[in-house]
Figure (cartoon, rainbow, N blue to C red):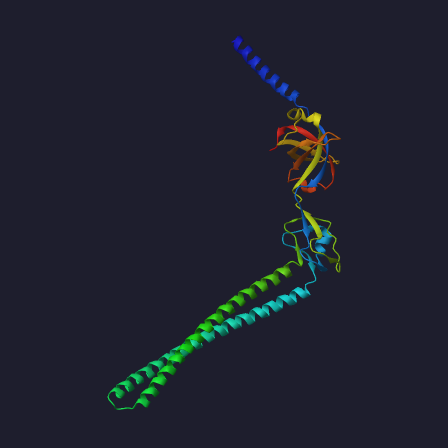
Length: 312
């Protein structure tokens, strides 16, 4: 019994010694860092023009929500072009309807001249029989043959008119497609005069003034998601020799401490592999916990303390 007790005491002591040794191997380090936006998006003007409207709400609060109209450029010319394209499209649709009516008329003409041709053809056959019997002279036969020939030409002309009307409809449909594309282009031109927020976020450098004229591609503002922030820090190369020992490895947790003592959890997302030649520092990035990152200011100086555990 005494031996069993001694065995368990030795086992517990061994476990505690191993744990203490493990803790002693870890050496927390303190680093200095700066908060920045992880995903910052630039909003540019898609076309040139003069500012006509600005979101007063966003100017006051510096915030924007998804698809919110932030800036509108003068759209008078674009609106006029859009109305012209719409009117042109209506005219082209009317041309298609006219061509369809022409096809109907041509088809009806073909039916009429074909009936007339059949009547003239039967009359010619009767006259031919009468001529063979000697009941009519050659002049009467020639007149019937001439009427048959004229009826044949009428059928051919009607068929040509029908083919012509089909060709005109095909061209009208092509013109209609071009008109629809033109209308779509004018709508795009109008949409390009508007600067919208791509998602809910915080605006930076958003200072437009009504009347200011801007060029295509110039920066209107920047926007970022407040819950997506990171901390940038630099670590000496000599410290990274024992990266595991000091907890500076991707996936390890850290405490990011503000000047007011507030602590926000973070995790190493990047530890660089290239050192600066002069300072012999390596850049590292820490992703902040989304639950507390909105309270952090951009460019805020913070203190970082490494932890031994992984981020959860």
